[in-house]
Length: 543
Image (cartoon, rainbow, N blue to C red; front, side):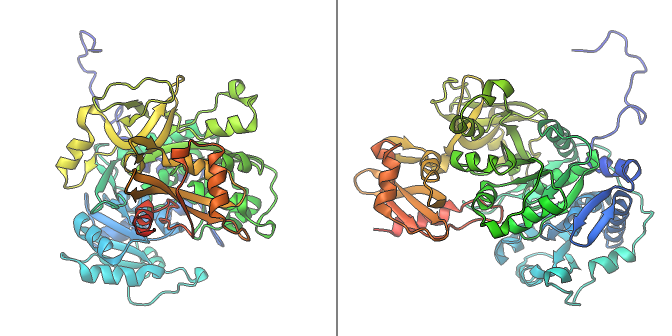
């Protein structure tokens, strides 16, 4: 199909077919944007020519350590220049990049080292103790270590391992990049959170990451030379692939090691940050920051937010501060975001603030690099697009993982029926826009009625005293389960359980209102997601 009757001599060759890879963006940028600022981290400022040189030297150094095609190089690094450079330097020597969550426990890190067969490790000095303990707990051969000190942040070199800058200085600046011959070659290895068992290794290919960068530029309406602040941890879906994307459009990457309201406002005011991505907790931080942590700025900052759906109340407030928020959605298995709440201009511009915020809380439609994303029932039939019937979000497209490393059974299950099964429950509106109802495991079933924790959380977040809210199922003798809310209050606010329950009753049906409200700081992952599995344990123990 699609072939002409005679295509003699019309073959793929070096001139007309090159494997897609995000490495090509930096290879091009070193010439096209040679003198433009590529990376900023405090006083560290490098041009694209220098950025390419540093990544090349890293590739050379790794090759000198015996890293070759298909070998895994792990990192335990926050959002600093070395972590960004690893995204190019590791695959440039043929290696596969495995960025590891710096907040994981020793045994989980050891498991990841073993499972991924890491041959080398770049580790920030802050996490040297974690790395050493994990190496000691491994069953296999420990990776070779390169230490990445950060004296400015208070983490000078220990002297126990080769230091990153010394390694780069001694490497070959003329090292030839090992570009993939097949775009299906593995680029990165990421691990799922593992909240229900051992984390699974998610394998990315070069094609998917390349198309993610192209699709994101379109969806985010980007033009040349944005200033992007890396708030999303680079160990989380490789920072949604945004570090690979910046050289495509000559953008400047502003590294953010410690995510605080002060750091974000300062970067926006001083570095003129135009874009950043972050979980809803980051939006909440900005909305609730005291005046002495804020800075004024005179441009609109474009924000991608993903994770738990942000409360409409938060979206309504942050817009007034100069941020234009677009809700996106995705998973580790999809390289990060694959849907967007694409704004329908004149159709929605005239809506009042609450209606606009409610629409912005939707996860939206498929981004350009995807083939089809929809909501189906258990038989893979399309659910009615009426905004009320729930089903599972199903995903198909180029930005879907190759599969789970060394786990063919889980891979087959995830891809059953020709779609990736997200495990997220959602409704679909008449215009095709998807809106998450809940993770399948987070639905509360009370007396046979399904209760969306997201819906209850959205109402709680509308209260002026509430900073964050999470709702989980609490076992109940009569109803099986009832909603139990955990609430983090704003500074100075005092918790009144009865009053807050009464507040929810003004909006929600009685069976949906929380039966208990517990005031405490909410446990969070390094990416700002609330750890509901911890709250479920607590709820089960509460009278």
